Length: 226
Length: 236
Image 1 (tube, helix red, strand yellow):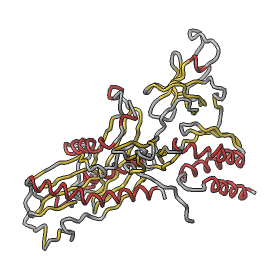
Image 2 (image 1 turned 60 degrees about the vertical axis):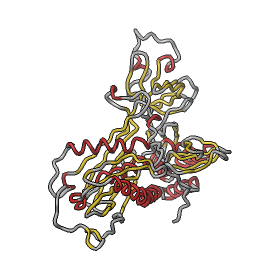
Image 3 (image 1 turned 120 degrees about the vertical axis):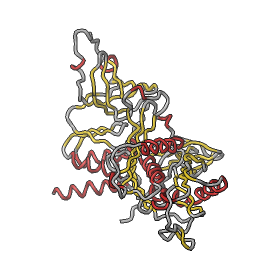
Image 4 (image 1 turned 90 degrees about the vertical axis):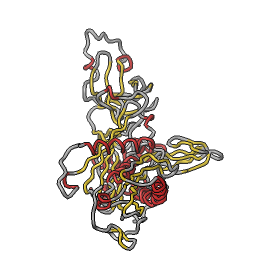
């Protein structure tokens, strides 16, 4: 089957001119030329031109909702693995609503090593990443399975207004939470099928008509079960 | 340089039938090591190199961290079976030097300032050596870095040049490397033609060095084209 592939640009490739376009994310300017920094897919929004990388690590951004794993409990907070070259820090005041007397209560009562949390980045100051559990959707995730994908492909997994993720949820009867850092948490009935679908999106994100393809993939599996 | 009675160029043709300005058959593949963030396989004739990129990742020990940029670490390694006499495993004087020049050749192409306090590790392994191993390694590293999604100003193209029997040649094979009058490995950024690696070993006139640089910048276009093809084939 022939698949229609999106346009791919390479690092160092000229993709625009500063006279007519503006340089967006993933690009830089040299001699009035807009040049790609990544191996990725170019995206033109109004007069901005940007490049979405096809691989790479997660760079923390303010107000991103992410899934992290507690890696150590400190005196007044927790250190969180956020699937990035840098570690996140969740302070006691941002992690728990009530007043806690740290002389009397162990912080392990709230989050212990290995716990999975859905949290928000509230501040990034070079290498110092502050997390918070205060936003209403933040919570500890019990049970379930974690899957890691390329962070730049998270928008594709979610789809336009959640179309992709909703169809996966519906067809596999699972509950899914997607962190902006490329960590996905799943629980429910047909986890394995949902994971296969997510892995497929990760591998084939550069192909046109992916939502339809995933729908076909999911309904094929449904037929086999019958 | 070693001396040999054997003629290295006969009737304008080299040992493997190439003309002086021909490069060997090139094969490039991207994404060959699943556990690495980015990886590549590059073959120039018989010389075969694998490159794997890990990172940007957290740098331990902490005192090596740079507060404003990532550090780049390169490890060049020749497999014991890569040459006809067994090479003693582990880094030696030569490997340390090549690791260092590889790092200097790659660094100008990267936006290291985007990842403060981290490290990017590049492992280059030579599986089969038949001359020009350091340039093959740099080509592999260039592809692996692009595959790892590390922001780059440009790809890095590398090619070796030299002089045998008073003739300027490019892309030396193992025998030519051993008996050449001079050899010059060069790495450059293909779009701006900035040279990031230039070494020279042997006897050669200044004019011949200039000619070799010009020849390599020209022939490098073929290598650059192959690199572009390999990266595009990764997503097909």
